[in-house]
Length: 386
Ligand SMILES: Cc1cc2nc3c(=O)[nH]c(=O)nc-3n(C[C@H](O)[C@H](O)[C@H](O)COP(=O)(O)OP(=O)(O)OC[C@H]3O[C@@H](n4cnc5c(N)ncnc54)[C@H](O)[C@@H]3O)c2cc1C
Image (cartoon, rainbow, N blue to C red; front, side, top):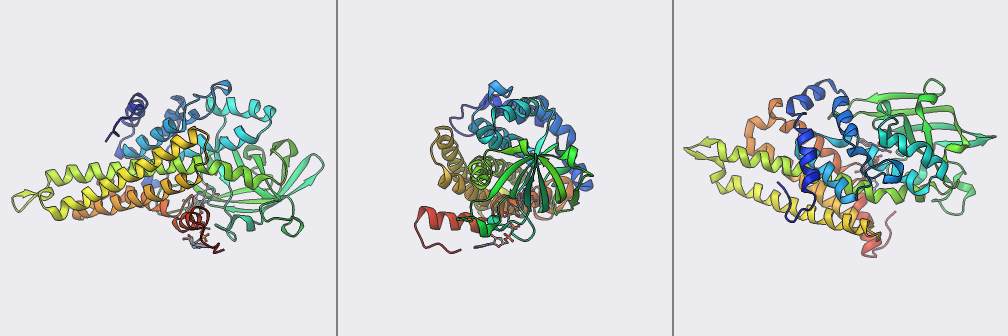
């Protein structure tokens, strides 16, 4: 289901060819075991797709965010799931924009080669959740190290990553003028920290998503692993969020395309009352509606990506892209189950698996309410609610 006037057809075709080696059976087997798609992630890494956004000077492909979005969309449109590795694509953005030259030279080429995995992003905590500025994990300077104590939750892929980008408080909240100050970002080498105060515990979820909770008990992080300036970390994390939203919105568009394609094919083939079910408008209309919702979301993803690429502020568009695309994929998921009747629930059709996977994007990486609240307050100028 290619988009009109799409100049990214060659990259889309390469991703599709790669994904053809990882069909429904592959994802289904992993889903049953809640196992990590190592072979798929290796293939994507070897093909250079996960290094799409790393500039050429650091050994990456130096592609645009539109190309990166096309990669993620195609993975999802093929029936696969990029959540196992999407963070490798954009988490390095914080290091790229705010890291020192030494840090960039040390890490980015190795990440681009796939020798070093930067898949883990530790922001959310059990007690603070969406209220990021209330996080409790602390990093206290002791000589040439910081000592980290606290807990993160929903730290996805921590067991499959060498490094974690961690947000922690370096100055207590009552000692800073603004709540947004006093937080800092660190690159934690989990290979060194495991067993030395760092504990990772997997969380089993309704879909196959390698997510975990992570405990820090006096974990020592070298001071040279601080990214940018101490106390400015919240700003650094925020600056990476537009890219994250655009890429995840593209995944949702891919999911919506997959559901629409499945439903359309099935509605043409399934014959009841001596005619295909797709001949009934009661079956056609929900598919047509899902299609138009998907195309609207897709336009917003393209708009946000074009603005991002032009270096413009795209907070409004990136948030709306995520909102519309997540809604489109969820509506398409529901429609697809309904079109398939009972078979929508059968494991072998992959629909129930993709349905469970699509639900996540109403909540993560940012929940629908928080996007609406951003639009209400920052775009429409309504009074701040919290
Ligand atoms: C599978 C999975 C993977 C994840 N991966 C990562 C990861 O790798 N790294 C990471 O840091 N985080 C990760 N997250 C966390 C994710 O970003 C959060 O779950 C999400 O931001 C919502 O936070 P919360 O779960 O704490 O919900 P809460 O903040 O507790 O919110 C609960 C509900 O209340 C609503 N709500 C809260 N405050 C308001 C308000 N003021 N107005 C209106 N509604 C409100 C929310 O919209 C939500 O629906 C992941 C989560 C999941 C489920």
